[in-house]
Image 1 (tube, rainbow, N blue to C red):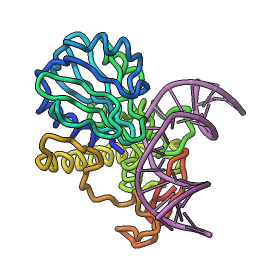
Image 2: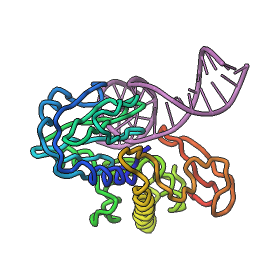
Image 3: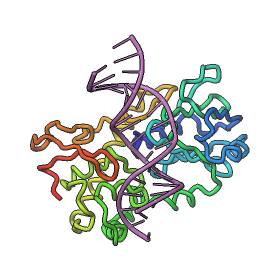
Length: 268
DNA sequence: CAGTTCGCCTGGGGGC
DNA sequence: TGCCCCCAGGCGAACT
């Protein structure tokens, strides 16, 4: 499940390999992957890839007149291959470039691509601040939480508040904050919000570092998902001992998402 | 308007 | 070995 750190890693690798090439043709094998695909194909052909950047969990492939926005969702991934190599199972879109082809491969077909001439406007409408934005402070989080009665974890997953946090890191952030993922955001103090920002930035930057460090093991193909080697404390560790106090971790459901926490360390 | 539930998909794992 | 059922997960649409 790619979250911000994994997306950041994919962006770095794509950047190093396909910037400067132009899109010469598009093969579409599953139409739902691309929103408004006729427009997409019509517009992107013969545009040059000028840069590749990230906003939240979106990959931005920036072309001459607009950008291709890609959301990997759970299992979306890219493969850079030679034109003569066979197409992988679950590849839904192929961008044929000058020197290679870029396969978008997604087992569960949840990933999405679209083309827009105003990408920042499109993204800013749905996304809140980046986790490392200087404007991310206690006042921002307090104003975003005003009049809302939801669990801390649900708040962390809301992309219109902080962009880029997914199910793994929301659990890890709650653990680092020593807060129960189901605690109401209305109960958080100023100190808690400061702690929230700090924990978010520490966990995401460690994960980016870990993702970045494994880049060198990749060659031409990119099976780039979930490659963080960050020390995970709670996610996927239900019934296992807490790394701090050895109390068995509890698994529960919060806002339709599986969640793991330590009943001893994390207070409501 | 805010919060909750559903649907999209497929492969893997458990139960029998 | 094979079949069925459940689960995972981000997000938008459709609800309450």
